[in-house]
Image 1 (tube, rainbow, N blue to C red):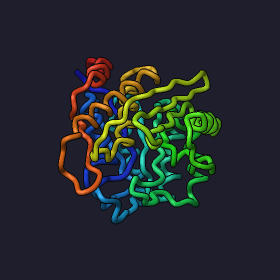
Image 2: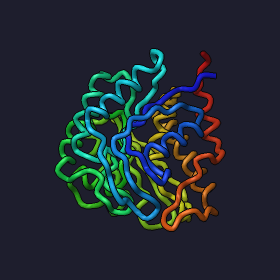
Image 3: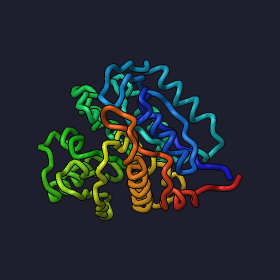
Length: 282
């Protein structure tokens, strides 16, 4: 069985919990292949981000070209874009996606700040990010804090405001928005998927764990895999969320990290079997 493939454009995480490393592990768990283009090399761990070394734009562009040209025609099924890490990466990424002319779905995980609070994209670059990259996205997956930054608006404090901001983000030109609500207080969380054709609400109980680092990266990568394997968007989102729930649950008992630890990317789940059906023979 030949797996479907995605290309992850993101930063490297020395702790292995997020970024490129999380995307590769997610793809493997869901029976897909993940090529990569590294935007920045980071020194980080469970306690936070210590240093970021940007990859020069010309090297970043060379990675895009090499990765894309290495596949057989139509084998690259989706692109996932995560942390850029520096403003100079943005034009290179935008140029690459524009060259695809909509031929490959693009999932953008709008990584603007780290969970520790570290700034991962300069505020001066947020406007260009919003105006040049987001309109090229098939789907964006911001959390509440990122939505507020992208909209230059107050942080949503209710589900009603969350829905309003999801609709406002859609007006920026992207194909769809998955606005995650996990930062609300309470024992449950609701995410809203908004498209030009309607919306869907995904609600689940929060899993109490200290091991949740990399969940945003992994969710976006899992959605990209689902899309690459031919699933409709809503189904890909639901399957990806089921996978993340299993990965969080699988790491509940882990005692690896001083701070926020990694999730269990290898956890078995119904969604991983569901996504496996998207494989093709070759």
